[in-house]
Image (cartoon, rainbow, N blue to C red; front, top):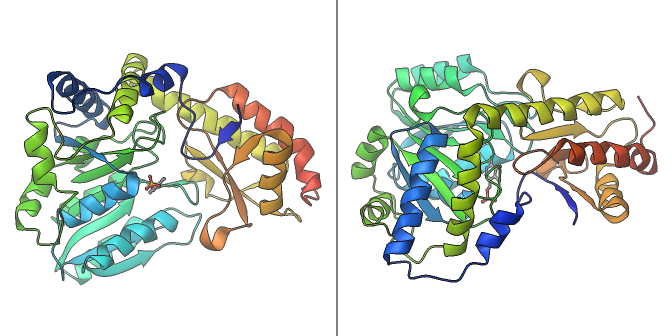
Length: 363
Ligand SMILES: *Cc1c(COP(=O)(O)O)cnc(C)c1O
């Protein structure tokens, strides 16, 4: 088995894989209703919310699209806070559906700052919603969302959050921070194959939903809620992924939130310390470095693309590359979900040999 160290899909524990092979059931029968009920209740605990939680069959991007089209109308002004590839994608979805997007971009590798967001909201009182990424997987940065949320909610705006690679791994208390729609995806820290996006919808988001005019059919919050009330989904769901999630959630709830977050933090710290001790440089501002993925700058002659190739071909370790303008300039180590210290140690034992082969001249 490869040491799959990308920030999703992540390896799945054997009990989850086993569940993925269970026989099909009627997705409109009582058994499925029980699965959906259990999964939804477990998700609410981990989202730390009393809001509705909807389970839609799609990858995470489907959840982002759902968040946009279910709360906004064409022509609505939306402030997009972006610190990387996924922040830009969220904005593109909004623009695609006719929102007027006002972008605030921060340098890749850095976290978003509160003051420019506050200024932008003051400068244009017509802004209806703010889009923000909690954990920017492309740069390995976790935004300090609490003060951002305070400003956004203080201004009475809708707050839509991409938490795809953080929810279930990094503390993100939806109700405490007042997040209106918070989106995650099954293949990240949840240790489940791709196929489900799970999102929370606040009362304010429901209010926006009643007025939202963007076109939608497959991803419709109202239909999803109506069906969820009878233990169903509007369309045939990825039943096997629901099985997998039900098993993974059981384990996560037994472990407890504090332990889940501490486990990710510990592995991330271990990864960052190892990176530095090898003379490599962290790409992310260390103050905001992510607990689910570490980005490493390809410095001192290192060819990032060659490195990921050597690691894959010679050591069976799969690292993440850089995306878009970061291609070849960074590589990324995923440490979310089902991962042990041993897996991280193996990465650095291999890197010690592979780095010089990929041009790295040392510190
Ligand atoms: C993985 C990821 C996405 C994209 O999710 P898909 O499941 O590939 O559609 C979006 N945002 C963030 C922050 C991610 O980590």
